[in-house]
Structures are given as structure tokens and as C-alpha cells.
Length: 406
Image (cartoon, one colour):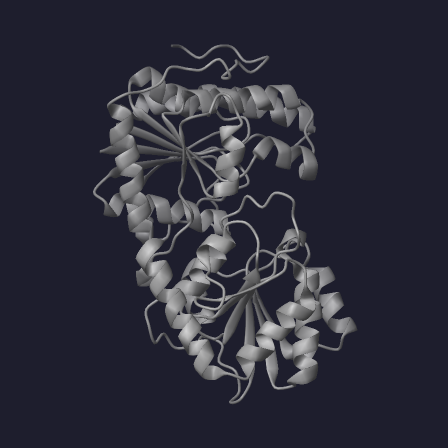
């Protein structure tokens, strides 16, 4: 099977260290492991390919210049023509697999015209996110572009049940939505891996992995760790990641005189993550209350694969991944005292930490591996080859963009 993997999102550096970057790398590597010949079409690379992707043909896509937001939006729309040309030049492909990005529709429409399977991986309601958090000038054009991509896709892969429900409300996507959550590569997390940042004997290490952004519950993490450290001074907070909230996060820690009990690694390459997780005694995903939690947190699956007891918010896909009391502990979102209480209970019970961690590892390796995701993708592609749908009425042409050849 020849596969074109498309990522036209300039916010996703496909060879970078962000969670979205790891997701791209793991899906591509898993498809190759399943025997597919994969070519990567990407707007942003950020460095050299990791070892697992060495030898993958990379076709750079246009990366719109910085400038006025309205012009950037128009540039992103016109970049569809370059993607279409690249797919024609490098094709034919049996499958076009695209990580859905704002403004991009040429990949799915190319697959439809070429008679190939077109699978669209959707990680969030991007139009709503852009409008709410970053700003959007021409919302109607963005919605039209998304409708074109949804309507042309053979199938849409939602990373969570919540997101799948949202997609089913979109007329262009209805009836072709499948839930495919995030996963792990078991080979990255071998049992007995030595810690990269070991703590002193007797110190209980609470770990957090991820970008430092407001919706990751950093305020609750600071408050909870302050309570843990007050009750158990021989404790450490190990934070793996970086982001726009780092300065505020460090200030909040300093205000509680916790600086000496916290170790922050900053951003690290994906191959450094397993050793850092092995340096933790328990890991947290303290998401705050959110009306729509669309995510499938990659860090939760990685914590579990590393054999860590996880304390996470009872929200969205996390409730499906973790069985409370059996493979982890769940707390009300944003409830710092509850988070602290769960961590203190684990600190006082090493045997329970081991039991929960082992159960978590068994659970995630049995049901959430990238090889299993690749099998699901290949199966959906084969199903699509046996019966495609035409563009639906919801796939309207984006305003201001000429029609691509049909």
C-alpha cells in the first residue's frame, strides 16, 4: 500500500518534540511497520527525521509567511493548490491519510478524484479553537474548507468519543466517523528502564509531562503539590516540558517557596521521555473543568505504558482510559485538594503504586498500541476502497479559492 501522509498544519512540527509531533511520527512509523510505503507531505519539519522515520520521502509544503492574519488565512487557502500538485506528482497513492488542519482540503479531494481511500484524522474542532484562542478573520471560509475536507473523506478518525459526537453533528461528516484514540509504542517503554533523573532515597516524585498551557491544569498542580510537600517534605515535582505558561508557573511555585522541590527539564526530545517517566513515582494529568474535552491525552497513555500510577481528572476520554481504583485514580477536574489527597495516599502505599502501575501498563499495551492503530487505519482504507461516498452537500467550496481540477 502506498500512503501519502499529509500534515499541512504549520503549528505541527512533524519532526519536533511536541505531543502532536510525536503523534505524527508514531502513526507514520506504525504504518511503515505494517508494510506500507509512506511519503510525508508537511508544511513544517523542525529538524531531522527521528531514527524510526529515516528514509521516509518528505515533500515540503508551503509555509505561509508571517504577516497580517487575513493575508495568512488567504495564503493557507491558496496552499491547497500546491498540495494537489505535489500529490499528483508523487502519486498515485492507495491511501491519503491527513491530520486535519485549518484551511486544508486538497488532500481529501485529491483522494476522492483519484479513486484512493481518504482518511481524515481529526484531533479537535479547529474552527472553534482558532476563533476562541488565536483569532479568525474569515470564519465562513474556514468552515467551508473544513466542510470540503469532511465531505471528501472516505472516513473520519476522531481521537475521542466527545469529538466523534461533535463530528456527527457536522452534515458533511455524518455517518463516517470512527473513534481511534491515541496510543503508545511498547518498545519505547521497556520494563525496568533506569531513571534518567533519579531522586534521593526516600523522596516521592510527582511527575508531569506536557506543554505548559492553561488548559493543562497547572494552577491546580501547584496548589496540590504545595499540599503534598507540606505533609511530606521529602517530595519532588518533576516537570517535563515547556510552554507559554512557564514563567507564571515558576512564579506560582516560588510564591509557595517550592522552588527547591521542583525540577523542570524544559522541552526534551521524544527519546528522552521514557527515562524521565522512569524517574517518577506517580504521574498527573490535572485538567481543569472544560465544557467540551475533545482530547485524547497522549501523556496519559505514555504514563500508563511506563507502569506509573496515574492521578488524573475525571473528564472526557480519560474516564475511558483509566478505571478508577484499578488502573489509576480519578479526581474531580480542578480539585487540587482531591489531587493532593490521591497523591499522598500513593506516597504512603508503595505496594499500591506498583499494583496500579502494572495494571495501567497491561491495560494500555493490550488496547492502545500504535501497531493496533495502524491495523485499524489499513482496515478502514480497505473498506473505503470497496465503496466510497461522493462529496456531500456540506462540502462547500471555500470562498475566494478557485476550484481544483476534478
